[in-house]
Amino acid sequence: MAWVKIIHILCVMGWMTSIFAVPRALIYWKREYAETQKFGPLGDLTRRLYRFSAGLMVIALITGIWLGTQWAFDTWVWVKLGLVGLLVIHYMMTGGMVVRAKRGEFRESDFYLRVFNEISVVGVIAILWVVVVKPF
Image 1 (cartoon, rainbow, N blue to C red):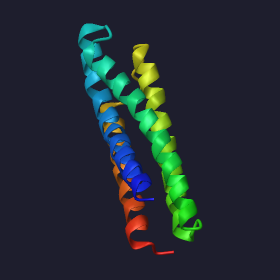
Image 2 (image 1 turned 30 degrees about the horizontal axis):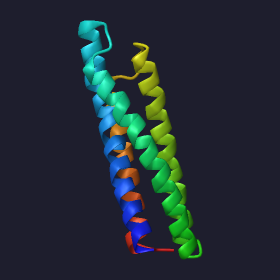
Image 3 (image 1 turned 90 degrees about the vertical axis):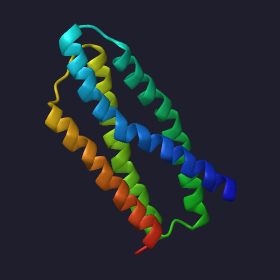
Image 4 (image 1 turned 45 degrees about the vertical axis):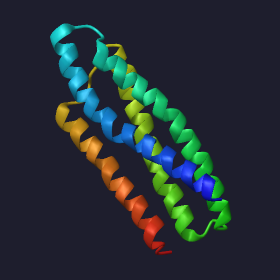
């Protein structure tokens, strides 16, 4: 079980990097595109980061569910899974923005992307609180 925990934590850390970085990178990609009107290295880096972390997300989810079975899916595990589900939705929304950005469509303002980015931070703090405190 220790190795599964290690893999889980490692994959979560990698996934979180993308969750925190990609919305911010979209701001800079949007600015770069406004200047050059073409898909440059920043866009490529953003897409690659998002795609790479998608695999980490899948591994984190699988190992997290396996770990949940080890705790007999106590109430706190269900709460954590619910919060993780919201984070997955956030991640998929980010993916939609990346796909549109590849087409040159930047609908979201810089302010929206900054707030969107901070929402994920609040979600991660909530997940950490549930895991550490186990209030339920």
